[in-house]
Image 1 (tube, rainbow, N blue to C red):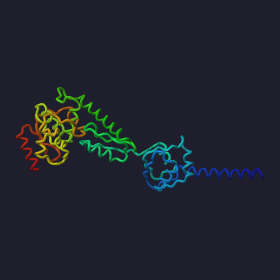
Image 2 (cartoon, rainbow, N blue to C red):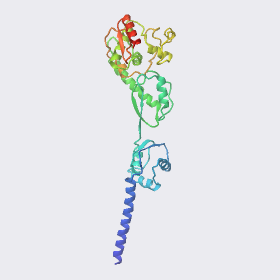
Image 3 (cartoon, one colour):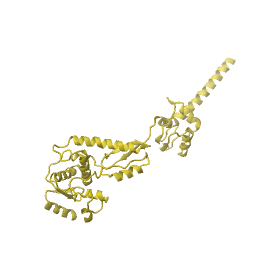
Image 4 (cartoon, helix red, strand yellow):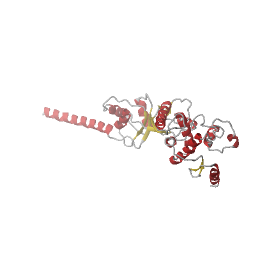
Length: 314
């Protein structure tokens, strides 16, 4: 009888222990503690106590006991990784710890728009709160317009290096396929002319015709006479070009000086660079806006003047 009672007592205690353990495991692994998706920034060297306090401020309530017990169920020691996290709705304590443990942080993106200038890029990259560190003075043309992905705290200079390498690679491939007897002497001249084409036109077919005009002019030793180089030299993007500007000795005044300006004037994209890879053969020497995002092209100055009238009457 005594033995029987002991067995019954043991079974009851075992059942209670098992039930309690099951409750805690289920509570930790399956019970939701997140009512709605939350953003959370986990800084480096944040203590476990502070993590719980920060989560509480976001209405994610987790007891220290549950947090400790959950940490015991990971394959390796629970060491949360710093970064930005999106904690999904209905996540349990264990699931929250799991994304912290694996470092499943939010990925940010940074886009350099085609035709941007160094000044615009500098403002944009310094204003980005998710990047860190100082940068040196930026050069025109050397960074590839594209979208780049990074994690919180990524150094600005590393992102710039990534953009520079991407532009170098693309420029190398374009230069490798340059036409025979190419009038441009090196990749820097290619970059300069592409940057001008980029500012004149962003459409591929239109860019090819713009490129042909500039190449034809260079071959004939004509001045490029590009408004966009003059606008860059005077930092008056989008403003009207004045007679005083046209007569100036600004090094970017291609109405006064032959050949290319001293540096690129923007960050050229794929279309602008590719327009110089296989030059479209034309006899065009002039172009003017058609008022619809494209251009009208002409072989003679008289035809060009007629196109200007059409543009003014648009």
